[in-house]
Length: 346
Image (cartoon, rainbow, N blue to C red):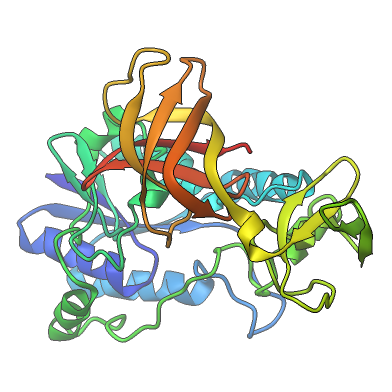
């Protein structure tokens, strides 16, 4: 096949391209420019100019065509949404939206323009028979970030690393003398170049509402400069109260940030919105039994999902879940199979 590979300048996408080429496919490398640059050499995004250079040099090493495509306008919309969510007292997950709208949205359109039949990335996931499955390397599995893909896109998406361990990926890169073989991983959000997400929020519309820290009885425990500095489950940056307290909820209308001991973070249910299925959607109010992850690195917990057919659903967990955070994703699994997901509303 003729395949477009999203090249980030890292080892994973480099090996994905190499493996597809070794399988006999015609591979085209594409780097997605986000239009973001740090103010100093120490401030860089994971999609920086040096990453573009690494991606180009890997493609040159493999004898592949390489394109650097401007997605500045599209990333600007993601950044605006990111900032607006923090000002609403929510904690956004822009990587899910980037995968949904850009990598498996705009890149599929670009693939059509270039006459490519499929799009591939270096994500750790598997796509088999039109279904999205967890990666073999459980520690690297990235399916949490992929639930928003269109179901129809699964027939045109390839994840060459889904059956490999990270150690095997680096060994393949080293054996092929790829310059990215030992390149450190980037864990940051690509457009947060300073390391502090609040810089993005404040540059795109100002900080969130200032207000009070309050206890469960409504007693004021201190003041803060803006709700954009907090997320449910956070412990750092809070007043010293003798025993550890955590952010339990954020009120964007009053600016109140509710603090409580850790046990108050535990929940057995969640309301979600924007339900998106990667399998046949159940009938309205038909219970679905699944395992649900409320954070990328959390353990999936057995739960009952009841969707109302309009995009909203209630998730009832079999055991307590800590720090269910509005704005984050709740992703539904059945074993290795990704059933779909939604956005946590409360």
